[in-house]
Image (tube, rainbow, N blue to C red; front, side):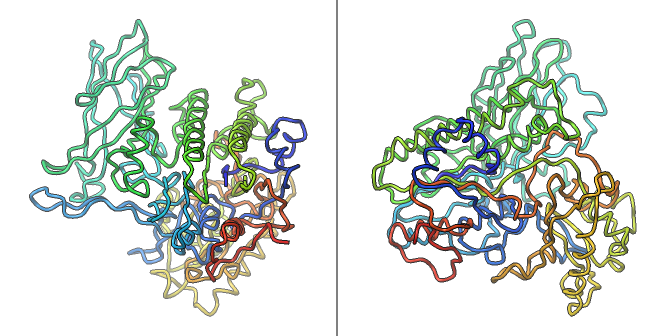
Length: 624
């Protein structure tokens, strides 16, 4: 099974028709092609966990990129939706008492674990949101999307420059940190880079993050330089990705933590501007296990050298903040797709497996960042953009087609191949400030407008608030006994959710007269042991609309509908799932007319003659 995150069927179909995806076309002719029904909502963490567990979100407990803790001290609080990273704990003398631990919020059993328990050998490579890795007795696993950086964030990059303005340094940038360089007339400087959190200190306390020193040497005339850390060094060259630089963080005289990073110098001359990747796990000495067995990540380092371990593999944060250029981003896409292709082909050739699963996320990230170049109606469309940017999405799909072709060359006659995506894609032209709508319609009350504008569910008068939104696609009621300061009687919650959903279905964009929402889904669409944690309403936006960023981060304020003036210009996260199906191709006839993502694992288990757990919801797509 080859998964390509976010591949859009309409684009794929058009490219097949034009002869641009010959290997997808060959699969379609050989076995068949279908739309693959995604999840409610069609978000990557939700859909990939439904793929893994063959169950709906109400069973596996992942509903959004962002979840909320309803029992905060004063009201609900935002959390990462998929899991957390607990830092190590140290004794007063600095000795390690407990190592760092990755915790997943996912419930349920993955189908490869169910297969493994029956003696079936699986190789699971970079499947998104399967971190920490599942223990496998008969196979191997390498985690992908979901692996945090050493700070425990999705990915926090660093921008280094000697020309930052005060405004740039004071700007609150998402997913990054700007560090000024001061050469003081010389072409050498030393800076401190934060790494893993020290659990002995509070988040906002000085020294909360263990640091390491980097020494930069710059030759402005040659537009080159060096970066050194301890006894390691890498060369810098303008416009070229550097090699990986190992880093060492001393948390105490008894605890050291290893990491890696690399650099992309955007300018070395009168000004110096250098992008530095987030500090990632060292595959030979990972902060927490990256793989199963644990030594597999080190084995790969022995095969290939140091390699990217961060789950959020492409730095969309830095590109959005103009701290990483488009061409550097696309060069990284090429390198990362190639590395995962090599790993996949090598593991196929090494054999010793019954199931092999591998995934790529570039198809999704390029869609997010480059859709603005292919939608003439997008607010930041650039008609004169270079062709390599306008065709970036199609070129990434072509790269996926090459991967499919090379895998097909390795197949034996009895092998079954599936190629799929977890959801589709589309343009994101307009953001809808849902908390603003809730406020204006009497469902939410603001106590402190300045705090509420900053987001994170602050500044809200919970004693007079009945509903709120936090996350990309989730609306919650402030239910008595569930939320800390809840006021909605539990017996009235269902009727209130239906009332709000009915009103939202009638909301129209005054500029077009079209509906903002295609559908709204009440919590009853979910079932399972985790259903009580589901959003009271899951949003289903019409094409071109999504939650505005203000609403996604739990903020209140701004216009009701606003244009998306952001490089992040393509979306799917809160689109009506009926409008955001993924792709599905196979070299075997697909008998099921309307397959869904939960079917893939069940089909795989049936195909290798394994027992299917009774709680699984999918069907065998190949059965007549």
